[in-house]
Length: 463
Image (cartoon, rainbow, N blue to C red; front, side, top):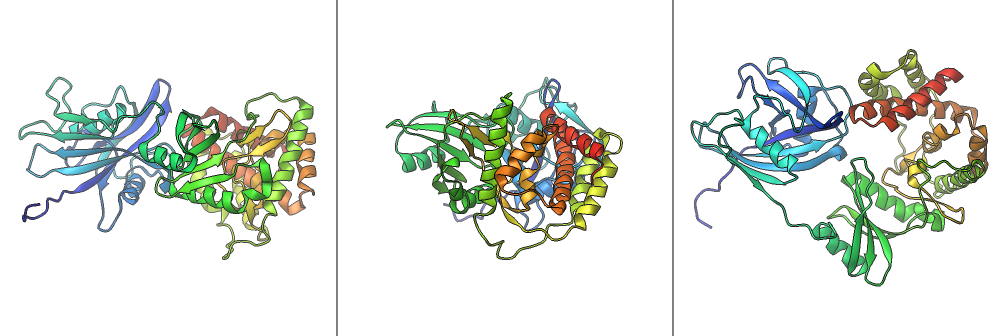
């Protein structure tokens, strides 16, 4: 290494806010305006890091300041890195592009002195004219490549010229093997179970954690899961270590966990998911009764609440954020019902917090050929109210009182009057959040479930 000063470059962050459009994936673009660089050109929401700020915090802040959307840390995914040199000046910079597919709020122009337009554009038909630097990052993103070099020459145009010379150099990542397992994940899995002969991606269609069914050289089968955020990894590992053992063979067993890759290997369970299946009525009653029994075992697996039990945040705080995004898609009376539920919920007695699954619904259930029911996917496990684990199952109870009775029969007791109100309130909150998420991500199943629940609550006139 030479004795000269180290080369340093500024770092900026770019937000690829992505949704599924009618003709394919779309991204949010904004048009620069006023006394800023590249005024009049389209660009991704972006900005520089503040002193002492990390990249993820920066892109979340820029998203809020420029578009008004709220993004959780666990929903930020690294997409592309671009080394760029603009046509004016001699310095270069590093741009880090982040993909986000889940957020709350409706994107809108929040800085009219710097932006005079905003809209969704298909990845295959981006707005023009666009900043060439931004276009280079999106070209790499569309190609599924991790990085690009975009060094412009003095006199080059700031905007992307479709018919001009494009200086973008797209860089491929490490070649994937036939099993499509990233190198570090494969190393972790093989340290755990030995040589792997087959790896099949069985991830859920929605964006999130990735799951592979892996087969060892001796014929054994396990599941390898890489969490999309450290929070999900921490929750699931803790649940498998502390709570899932109370369910016995009705839940997977944690074989190994690796914090470096945010991955786990768990044992495989036999069975089919009842999600989307038309079950025989008698079979579904048995399924609900067994789910009630498993929920009770989970809720009672430890007698203690968290070391520092804290009352849930005021319901109105989150509800107002979700209502802002969902409001255009609500039926008459929905908003009033949800706001009334928030007032009611905040006035209920402080609930007991217990270990919960966090996402108890048919898609996280397996039904074996012998009729046994099993649970998996504990990445949303946390201390919460008992009724929180009943919210999404309650959608299956609509018009089927025998299913509700079967679940509570397995649970071992009926709900108290306060719990009945609490469940309805939490169902209303989950519905409006689902409608907001479903519309922004074109997920009609989640939207319809939310609408069904709100319609049921309006009809019942509760709370």
